[in-house]
Image (cartoon, rainbow, N blue to C red; front, side):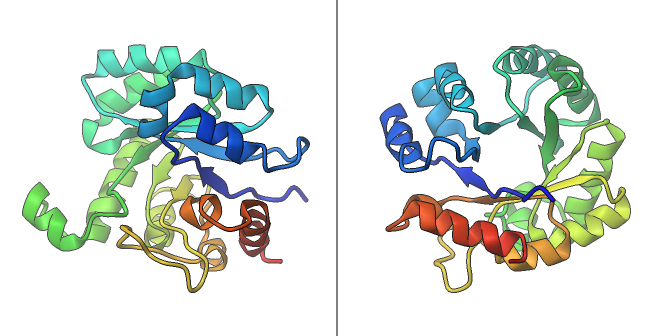
Length: 231
């Protein structure tokens, strides 16, 4: 059976930092990596091409949120980079998400951000003026994402079961905020271990600093991968 790969968040400021980090891994070790805003804005599309040329899978985490036509056009550009997964903000609405799907095409996985894992319920009430519970907000966004024809959502592992119950078992749940037991939580408010995320039904997990800032990133990666696969 094919092993699941944790998605490594390449939260580095420069192209050179990425090259140094990826060079630590054996050439035949094909990773799944996340390229976020900081790195993409610093290095541009070339960083995606470079990582893809090494044979790795890419989740391009840009969280697009704009009028439908603009998002559709942007997704058409991203589709030409060969990304394996990318995302939008569900708050952009069903029409925007449909436009994103049309622009990206049917190949890559397209998911939507519900509530960021750095958002607490108090912050949601105060700043977004959404007066439901955090979980109700997330599930609502997930249902709208499914309605728009997207593959799934970015969510906390704590919300996976409710999301799949409200959509379907094949609906993708990608969960950031994953930390090995005993690791620092950092700026994440809602976190879970790889083993717990596996048990609760997450389809993908994103892990950053516990791998990228480890004394030995390769060892840390394989340890988290083993936990993620229940080994």
